[in-house]
View 1 (cartoon, rainbow, N blue to C red):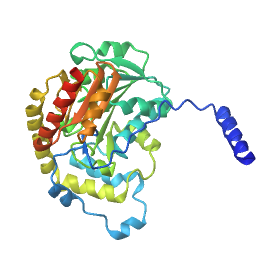
View 2 (tube, rainbow, N blue to C red):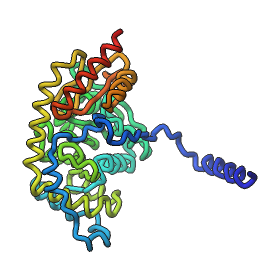
View 3 (cartoon, helix red, strand yellow):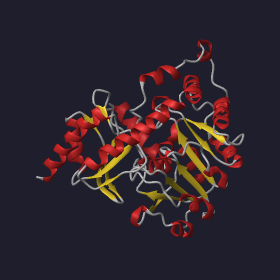
View 4 (cartoon, rainbow, N blue to C red):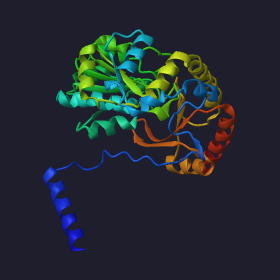
Length: 357
């Protein structure tokens, strides 16, 4: 007991000496398994097994013995050629969140304050705080408009914006104006861009934009944890210096290469199917909601936790969104093929009716 007490005392003193911040930036994700319908991660649920059999060609056995090429430059070059991007403009990352981490680390090293356009993806604030930034909110205005003047006149010299936005599902129409007028770094989260028809990155051309992309959403490869950022080569070089030397595995790199080579038609078909289902499902939800060119719908409800709990009991896991600007009590669900949506809509109606009583 004495040794345990001494260790506890030492740990407490060490934390005091280090002056660690509180852990309010920690991200706690419950493990829901696979027995229920996973409608909380916005995974692409429309891609057929044929697609995965086509792209899941493993690396050569001997490749598993060795580390990948430094910074996964081979895959970066494949992406550059595929989208006709400038050489050296792509940095491969361990998912989009790692891309956000690199961009926000750049903002931190530059001594820049960060503005976050809210409401938006919750991990943006989490990652910002993890790297030591203290983000300031810039709320969306009427009609989900972005006040570019407010951002330009703010004290922040870096800004995070997601488009199409999560959870409001809308395309930020002022994004290019922001990139053109804002003198600092624009961290553009384009996780859902393909669902809106934006396949090739473009905003890097403004020179101050770090465009964050992922293969987890439309491309349906969330389990691989592969993303990439596109930026002016000078910025991309700095981001590479902040990256880990081997961000993704050889298996992940090979599967993504195969997806780019052979999988585009499957992904495009799935995006079209998402649109069809969204147009069929949205009118049947009798509540205020956010609907747009993405693979999810966000619904305003009286009590998000109670509705989510009722849906969970019915076998559907959804995301609860509480306390966000313009979304004080919401649930967000991923679109799935219509047979699943029919079951979900029935469960949702029952949950909403129970909440209204």
